[in-house]
Amino acid sequence: MSTPEVMWPKKTREYQSHHFDSTIWNDFNFRDDDIVISTYAKSGTTWMQQIVSQILFDGQEGLPTADMSPWLDMRVPPKEMKLQDVEKQTHRRFFKTHLPVDAIVFSPKAKYLYIGRDGRDVAWSFYNHHTNASELYYQAVNDTPGRVGPPFERPKGDVVEYFRTWLEKNGHPYWPFWENVKTWWEIRTLPNVLFVHYTNLKNDMPGEMRKIAAFLDVPINEDKWPAIVEHCTFDYMKKNATATVPLNGALWVGGAETFIHKGTNGRWTNMLSEEDCRRYEQRAVEELGEDCARWLATGQYEAS
Image (cartoon, rainbow, N blue to C red; front, top):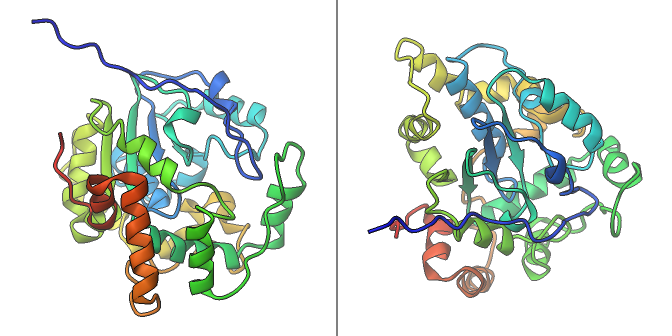
């Protein structure tokens, strides 16, 4: 019996906004060992970048992870500059994207790590991220040439109001939440895709890191393993935030330490009403289906 042909994802659209320029993927030259870290955002992206860098470089101190692992489809700096920079990289490359699958070019040879997190935790983290954005941040996303659509605005209201708006307007003022999760969920069984959940990383980081290393085909140097794990802890990353945060934290009031904020789940538990939670959970099932909604909330699912 012949093996069924793998149906690889195809790019079907461009996504451009105050933050995105998906056209960079059209001109990007993949290498066979490239690693793509994908999230909606505020789901453990920087954490995963640190984990990958530490696995690849045997727990080396002082790695400039943010510089080594750019956000490929953010529209600043210009894609021409970014493409030149990544082409010069000689290490095994690892990038991040916040786009849905159908807005990127997908390589059968690359490895894709998708990180998920409960949307309520995402919104809470975004509130800190957004309220502490500096004037330089707004200048970068609003005033540099190439912005598509309306400008990015400062947040209004408290965190609960922020969450309600984010839910009602599907990720506003950033980008749609549900389509990001859904499009990646639909390809979760591909051989070069690994799903990781923020909660599972919190509960058993060393165990999850070993799964990630195996997926990336990187043998673990056991002599270096304690340092590799230590350098991926929240405390270590907070103390060494400048190296792991984009532009060394210049886009946030208070710097890189502000970007790496709490790293905890469930801060919404005693703040959202039962009705707020019911509306969110119902929306998750409607948009994603029961299996994906359960995974997003808990990190648990049965691979089909």
